[in-house]
Each structure stands twice: as structure tokens, then as C-alpha cells.
Length: 493
Ligand code: 5AD
Ligand code: SF4
Image 1 (cartoon, rainbow, N blue to C red):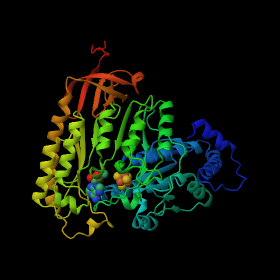
Image 2 (image 1 turned 30 degrees about the vertical axis):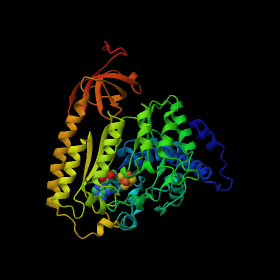
Image 3 (image 1 turned 180 degrees about the vertical axis):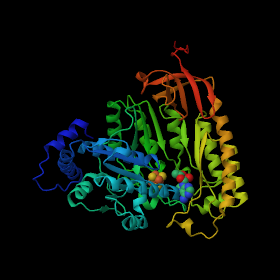
Image 4 (image 1 turned 60 degrees about the horizontal axis):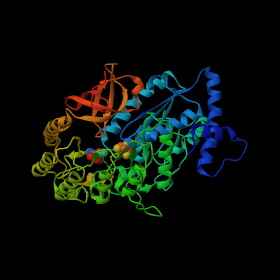
């Protein structure tokens, strides 16, 4: 892992007259330098700095990928701007539900009208949606004005793809079907100075029957524990106090490494990194959540008392058709076991309604799980048919009206419970990470508790990035109003 200055120095040392290096990291630094030169010419001609904007759709995995794209673009010499004013716009897309795709097509229409006015505007598309061959076909046919298309497996190649586009002046498409490569040591531009996502694994091998992720993110690959730990140690040196370990299914981390390591083992090593104050992780598949993990969570208070444990459905029949590989009873037993070991834990989940063949009784089972578990919050989704997945070919799709009705009933239930659960900390003092000045009232700061709930409290910008003890004065639905207290519990004047 290089520091920013070391990376800068490495790029400076590159001689573009030398042959293009074969080794991937060096090769990308070579192209970074090349793009730098090409951009310098562009900026010279325009008489100003060139700007970029990366717009992210979808999950935290994509958000982290976007930070990597931004790191590369900044090292090339682009300056960050908002989408309206950027010379180079990249959409990092999501395809988990159809809505996500429709959003991208809609915004492309708008970008086209901008490009007609400014022919120098460059448009790049990457991320999960680009891993679907029919999407790329559609863009090639109906969105000719797009400049670059690449996928989820080769974002580290942005500089090489960009150099190609700048030199050839034609649409460049570079999509890999899958990969076993993990390229380390490339630049990253973190959104927050005090917290960061950290990829621990890529891809997914679960093939839940509704989900497109295994097709667009490829097979499971884990990073070596030493690389992860070195990255976190560097982040801590750079002022990071909280990390979010990212993977589609963190509980199966390390199974395919040459020297297998469990997620619980990795987590306990990370918990011992000095200076690191908080650890989060996402996402846990219930079928792989081990007793060892529960023990580690109970042992280290640094590991946030929060577990995102997607249930998807409460009906064992539907779960079977979803290929989730647990039953309602097994899920509930797991929740009991976790709560017994970590009593103050907050549980959140994802639920899909309207999976093919879901009956009213199946749906009642889902409501039953929601009432029994009492989630702190739940993301609820209407089933979306994704072509190529086994569920898309099932012939018992549920009528739209029925799904809408179930969705509304579920949402109501989830929100009522969530309000009650959220308020259970009223009157207590909690450790809160101050994250930003409040959007609406600049005399307030907004921070997050370990369980991910937001708290607004009087404070000033100098406190951002600090962990503070905050008294939770009042719960307002899904967030708290609070006040900072001293260690002895007295309010700070
Ligand atoms: N339709 C609706 N929701 C889906 N999810 C994944 N695939 C689909 C789909 N085809 C939801 C799941 C997952 C979350 C990230 O998105 O609940 O946990
Ligand atoms: Fe994330 Fe999945 Fe969407 Fe890709 S498809 S951005 S992995 S949620």
C-alpha cells in the first residue's frame, strides 16, 4: 500500500518512451502518466482544468468502487465538479432491480442533450449493469454518444481505457466476463477522512434464484488478510477511526484462500489494530453466520452492535425456492442465539415481497418473522424480475396489485416496529461518531451511533471525526436529538 506521495513519485518516475509494463500495477501507473500528458494537452487547448464527476447507483460496494475511480481521475489531473459542470461524467451503475436500470437510461437521455451543446463532454458507464450483454448491445445501438464502457472486474483499468479513448476518439468497450485478479495499490479518493469502506472479498457464489449479483460480480474472491490489515493500518495512520468491511457475503470470507482464514479470525485480527475505534461489516448471509463470529462480536466492543441479516422471506417454502438454504425456524433460532450473546445488538434486514409463487400465507409468515424479530430497520423490496436468473423463468409470477398491497402492509408493520425499536435508547448516553454539520441547522452536528442510528446534537465542525458521548434526549421517529456529555455524565455547557 503506497501513500499518496509515494504514488505520485512512482508516476513521476515513469518514462513513457519505455515499453508498456506487463505487471498490472505498473502498467496502470504507466497509463496514468499517459493520461496525464493527454489531459495536459486538453487543458492547454481549453485554457482551464478539466473536471470529472462519478455518480454512484446502488450499494456500498459500488460506492467504494467509485472512490477508486475518483482516486485514479484525480491522480491523472482531473478536478472534481458536480455533474452539471463536469467534462467527464461516469455513471457507476447498479442492476439489482429493474428500477436501477431505468434510472440510468433516463439520465443518459439528459446527458445526450448536454453533449449536443458541448461535444467535448465525455461519458463513461461502468458497474454491474454493464456486465449484462443485452445492456451493452442496447447502448451500442441506441446510445452511440457514450464514450467508454467497462464493467465491475476492470475498474482498476480506468486509466488504460481512458488513454485508449483519448487517442482513438471512438467508443471504447472493455468488459470482462469474470476475473480471478485482485489489483492492489491503486489510488483511492475517500469520501470521508474519518471513515472508510474496505473490500475484503469480491463476487458471490450463492446464486439466490432472484439475484443477478453472481452473474455481474463473478465468483467469490477473498483478499489476503495481510493486504486487508495493511490497508486498515494505513487508513488509521491517515485519520480513519471507523471501517466498514465490505463483501457480498462476508461470512464466507477466506474459504478459497491458499491458507483458509475464517471471517471471525479476520475480524478479531482487525479488532486488535490500535487506533481503530469502530468496525462494521456487510453483508451477512444467515446460512454462513458462525458461532465463532458471534463470539468475536461479543468479545470486542469495537465491533459495532449492529448486524444486517437479510431474511428475504419468512416462508420456508419461498426461502427454498429462493435457494437461501435456511428455513424460517433456523433463521429465528439464529436471531435468538445472537441476541443471547450480544443483548444490545440492533438487527436490520432486507425483505422481498412478491417472489414467484408467494401466497398470502407465505406473506403472513414474513409478517410473523418481522413481528418476532422486531428489526431496528428493514429495507423492503418489490420482487423485480432479472433476466437470466432462475426465478425469472418461474411461471407463477404474482400479480402486481397483490404485490403492491402486500408491500404496503409490510412497510406499515416494519415502520411501526422500527419506530418503537429505535426509541429504546432514549435517555441513555451513547458513543456517537460526529460526521457532518447538520444540513438544516448549522449549529448542530449529525453523527452515528454504533447501531447506525443518526443523532443530531449541538456542536461545531472541529468535532467532526471524533467519537463523543452523547445523551439521547429525544427520539423523533428514526433519529435522535441529543447533547454532548462529559465522561462523568454531566452535560457540556
Ligand atoms: N428483486 C427485488 N429485490 C432484490 N434484491 C436482490 N435481488 C432482487 C430482485 N431481483 C434485494 C435483496 C438483497 C438486496 C441487496 O436487494 O433483498 O438483499
Ligand atoms: Fe451493488 Fe448488487 Fe447493485 Fe451491483 S447489483 S451495485 S453489487 S446492489
